[in-house]
Image (cartoon, rainbow, N blue to C red):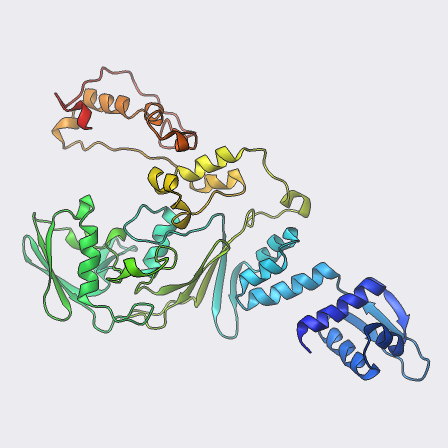
Length: 439
């Protein structure tokens, strides 16, 4: 008999007797369940082994036994959902409890933290939004920037403990001339789908990065042998290995633009591979064929569920803040990719949606800001900087936005919306003579 069938039989007893102790004979139970006494006895044994009932049987004709039903319907569903979560089947567990949402958060919260199973070590952490964009070279938030470094590898990487650059996909490099660098690639490196890394993947990835300003001085990338690539720069750059350690220089498969949903479920060569990424769970699993030291954690589960990090009773769980969806969307959009993608309706494939609770969005509150290059002739004078500040006034810019998204943006008067700096009044003067319209 399947477990679902056993549950149905238990629910029949629960609907008939309720959560109480009753005096009953085996024959009465058999009649009610429409099965033989022998089969009823087997059912009672399985239910007792599952912890659903307490059965005190009495032997002899006409003897009445004591049956106590220990689990109500919610407890039964929670137990089944818990077993599904232990097997990594999160979506099935949440769908099972879908009509009883107040059961989901306590159950998921009980599964957070570090756990050691017979087969693996799992870390489960909560998060307040989805992370659909794990695509290097695109605008990313802090959390995504950290995760892509676990999924992808670069030619080099920064050793955070000492702040120095070290080899990653490249085991060695040398500067041939002031503007030529040669990197030697590790052999037998594999992508998460089993395909071997080639120099063509490296050239394709870094040619893509050349479109960014920081990499614009790369004139040409040449393949030198089976495991060697050479960079020709337009200007001397002694910090070129450090530049290749940035997130935009991570190496992707050469055909990544042909892989469906690559931004959400990317394929890299890093220590972790993406197993699942949807509106409820991001699952990262240690990549056994990783070229470096294997990850200590076998699996990392990031669970997306509103208010999962806060302890609360059932009543508070259902309480919603009195905030319009406009304000919640404004906080979300202020850190998503771009206006054009939002208007085109593609942002849902690249970024997380707004949280159900507005206060949670303050976990990553921030704004855009601009720093002037003090070494530039145009920005050395305070008057020029004051002119730029006047031109880039957020309230003025908001009037130029598309009306479809104008109401979603929150202007920041300083580095953070709730900060306020006093700036001494100063006369403004443009550093450009006849180029105001080209800014």
